[in-house]
Image (cartoon, rainbow, N blue to C red; front, side):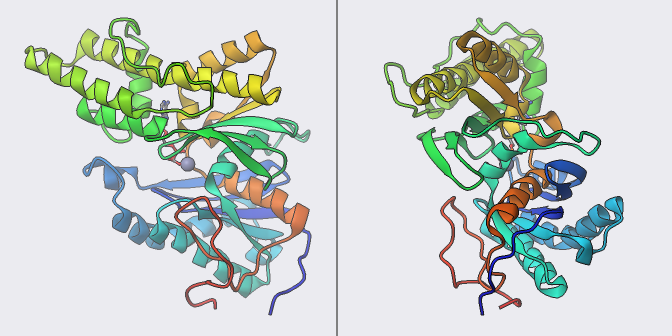
Length: 362
Ligand code: KG4
Ligand code: ZN
């Protein structure tokens, strides 16, 4: 039987298991009381990418100790929580289900409201998180424009509220993070290669090699990274065929040139989105938002255009559960929780249809 929604405020437990991080956090009205990330990256590294089956098995092993650790950090029992927020889309379905079933079980056992959160929206809402000791709220005012760039997504979104999100434009093929990771893999860098490319590129010449900067001549907000990826692969193959060893200055120049092309496309599309939408508050979020060149170029673009940039703080760029608890807390305060009996996971951004809740909590 469906219950009337209860609008809650207070400490919210966040749970994130959509990909290869098992993460939990407790957030109270945007203040991050604790954030724990148990990374599986070392387990997937030898495969050069995330293996879904390994991910879900390890979420199962890690989720309860990670929930317990977060609660111990803040000295709360589950019954003291105002609610539970869980990423329920998009992501690897088996991985998502571990988090969703854990959240539903906690909600049923301790009579807590539970809410399913969109992972990409949570990345963007992380711009409103602040350290526990900071009392005053911070972050963008609504409405805001968000550049969401991660391993699986590159989008420009308009936010009018925690759940009022419109896609203004997105990549037609690969995500920016994926393009960086695949290029890095060809160069022999460990997965995920984005952070290593960022570091190595600092020593390199971004003008040594010319790489495509997306689709020229368009005035919409679509992006494309597959041309860049192909050009990167061809350049590496050509250099190897010429007998070059890809290390030292050559490696640095390759990374710098490739990264510069990816960043230029992101920044120019964000500039166009701001001009077309008239939005003045700009958020950059997701794992790739940790990139130092992208942060600098977005800052310069926003200063030039008279926009206010809210770059998500580095600890909350990569996958984490503080962002999930932050957005979930805003949703719980605005409209209460979801039906614990039917809350489900979905691989895509579209919310799953109600009434299909799986597993023991039905
Ligand atoms: O948001 P995230 O942790 O997971 C997804 O939702 O996909 O993003 C992971 C992505 C990976 O592609 C990783 O290479 C990239 O973020 N990344 C970076 C940097 N740090 C992480 N890319 C470029 N520069 C960085 N400093
Ligand atoms: Zn993510």
